[in-house]
Image 1: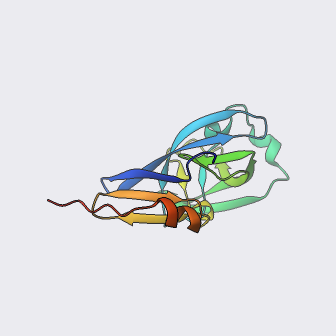
Image 2: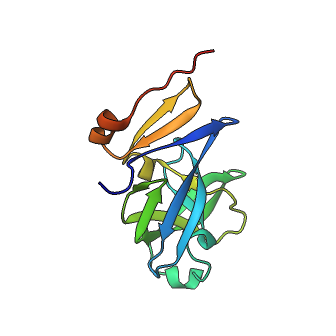
Length: 150
């Protein structure tokens, strides 16, 4: 079998971060910590997370969205960007679309429901961990609820 398809991370201060691998269209590879945000509709970040060489002028005909609530309620311009590969921890999701901005006020890297809905996501209050399973087979075969006893 290939890479593991169950991944977990801790919840600290009511936030959870996951290590993700991104491979751009130009084969630029980056590893970044994304904030798991089940309240966010889209996975989004600054363009430098994907590829420092990207320029906004190249996105003139690309799909664009105005997304609000990220910086003091203002709407910011994001462009759809197609990744060759997106991996959460050890779970390879293959090609994915994310939303990038050239607005330098963006500091958080958000993993939103557009990608999270492709996984089984389990929040375990007993050990303060978030678990990600690629599919139901992996969930049934490899996931075990751990209960902390104190």
